[in-house]
Length: 556
Image 1 (tube, rainbow, N blue to C red):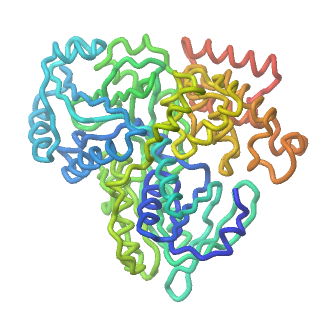
Image 2 (cartoon, helix red, strand yellow):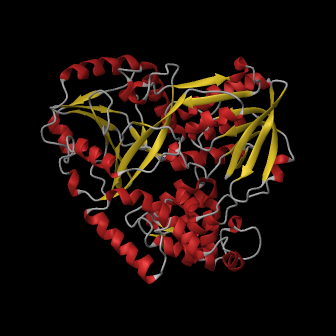
Image 3 (cartoon, rainbow, N blue to C red):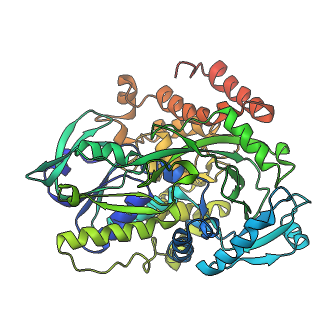
């Protein structure tokens, strides 16, 4: 990563705060309209809500009854994203399923509401549905087919940022905004702190976009503003089995544990809705997991026979003008707040919404910003793909060096970095070896991401490649990853000077610290589900790292 001074020495048109889907979508839109924009994120990209959800690309059917506007937005954006972001989306389709426990009254309302919103909801016979999804409960009453899909939030955000960079945008991770500065009622810039080095500085800009998700209230307070955003905590469970090929929604009023989403080889069950005061309240607990399992058995009676891979939690940034509305009582729609109305010119906040509507949210914010800056350019984000398809020539080269089972995954994950990974393999064919068998991550792909200036840790690599997110939860690839870092002198951004060996001596990039922080993050999601096969897997990992390698994370 460039020194902080490289950003403080120049003036930007716009600073976007928040490295989730909304911030990345806004950055891309602004850059494509010719605006000089910089994105700042306090951690790594996709560290917050955009990676802590069930991964559902909504058809809008879930919101059709209660929030028709949100339903219409979802189905429109669903169609757009399947077109421009095909490397991020798996077109699974979805079922809405009514169980005997759920009365017919809501079903009638729902069918009518879907039709009014333009959402195709086709009835299926129970027999046909169970032929397609044989693990569904045998006593289900009715089933409808809808155009739901699964979406990879990690990949989506990175590909938006890569697209924005092609148009001249900048981004800096591990950079916390400590204050929004102003003079005479107008924004002049933002004060920032490098969360790794402690370095501070001021980045001048004409406009600030607050797209910090559950943290928008905290950013607003640094500017002397108040925003009524209530973080809402949701817990989810990931199973090490793809026991459904389609998204399965329970056909009733929105409640906990209503959605099963297939992703690759796993299935995610979610979610809960709990009031919280902290935007970073993301450590799940066992009680919530058991609640979800109890609810999930209604649609999948054999759920206890599937191994739980891990559990995780995130917070939704719910905005409401009604102070009494919270949780599922608050709208899932989004709002753009122009703070010039409150006396601060040059700042706006966007909050609420869903990942499905991130592009539309970015468009609405970019419309506002461009209007303020006098930029007369149309939005093109619904037309241009996030990632251009690799050329036939590049794919032909890739097929000669990549392992067949990992080629398509690598191309989708790496985006603009794919060509560089191919070159690594051509130079050293042995690097086609799989460093992570679960997610089919080659040594070449690992090295490519590790060598980039925005990568500081194994967890940063995980969010780009999915290393450690499969069956073994990093028990094997974590150790291999540390070995690869030290052998190839990787993660240059993680140390200020010198080689990896020098940094290890100083404790900046030492193998034990790299491995401990990687395994500790995995442990947060495993600890609440320590029973059955998960407990046995954990004891294996403890034996490897605690006994054999003498790495103890108990003090973390």
